[in-house]
Each structure stands twice: as C-alpha cells, then as structure tokens.
Image (cartoon, rainbow, N blue to C red; front, side):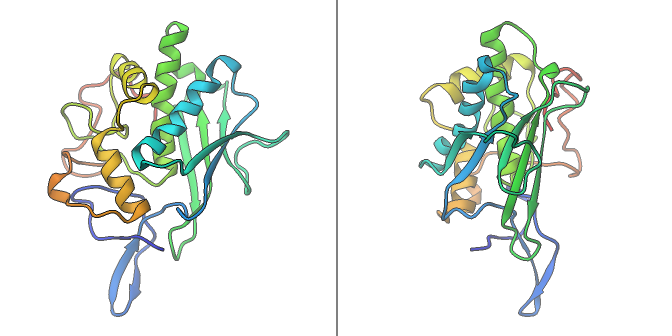
Length: 231
C-alpha cells in the first residue's frame, strides 16, 4: 500500500510528485513493496575482502525492521548496475566522486522498482578491519537511501545511519552497531517500521531531525571533505 507523507518536520523519505486525490494534494513515500523480499545483488567486481562487510551493511536494515525482509545474493554473471531486474550494488574503482544510490519508482504509488548503489573504493582508507567497518556504515547509509530514506543531519549523538560522521565515528558505528548484535539506531528503527510495516509512530518520541535544504541544516560545518564520502 502507498504510504502518505504529510510533512518533513519529523522524518523524511523521497516522495512522489504531488497529486490531487479526493480534493486534496498528497505525496507518497518512495519505498519497496514490503509484501515481498527486497533483494540486493552484489556485483562480482566487489573484492572478496569486503563482500561480507557489504552484506552486513545491507542486513543492518533487517535489524531496524525486526525481520529478514532484505536479502543479499551474488549478482548473476554479467549483471551490473543499473539493471531493470536487480537492485545491484556495484563497485566503481575509478573516479573521485562519493558512493551514491539511485532509485526509480512508480510515479503514482511511489513503489521503488530497481535501485542501484555505486561504491567508490578510493573514498575508504585505513587497515583492513577499519575499511570493513567503514564499508558497513557506507553501505548501510546507501541502502537507506535505496529504501527511500532522506538524510537526517541533526546534531548530537548518533541516532541514525542517515547522517554523515567523521571517519572514526563511522568505523565505530560499523563495528559496534552494524556488525555486532546491538540494536539498530533509534531513528532508523522507528521510521522504517512505520513506513514499511505500518507500525504506530509517535513523532514526539523521535530523535532530532533535519534534512537537506532545510534552513540551518547541513552536515558540512563539522566535517572535512575526506569525512563526507557518502551521498
């Protein structure tokens, strides 16, 4: 079922263009159909030392949902992003842009059809364990976008994977939150269950929120260019 959005005051998803329905203007959240598995396919180009970390980043959202809705497979031979039949996580070893996500959706209902995630290895440094923890954060962030989440740049202790953090904090989140058995971060857990599962949401209990293009909301006041390696 489409999920109607009323405002960006407390949380935000990418949304359909405004439509007039029964005499009022509505927006629907862009999201996958939660009645069937959401499958992400790992490109064969992703190096073996990082593949499990990438899988962990995808599976973070199962922790947030409280059920195994997301699945990870190896992409069939020859399948690369973008692809109309698979949600591909692609490895892009050249260029200097940040890792990023792209989604296509039904303009009437907001249902996400294919999604593509592009990982840029030149944006992740350090020894292997640090790189893998960083990849867990980067992939979870980009899968969040692929699920429809906008950024949440609210300042303070981490309450969402959809913020940007200094390198050391992303490594900590990758290790202590994503790889471990710890709960998903509070904002992610409450919002994804509301939008995808229809669970009740008291917006007064949500952590602080602000997103792109809102007045005074920016991640870049405290981060360096090297820290900001996701989009």
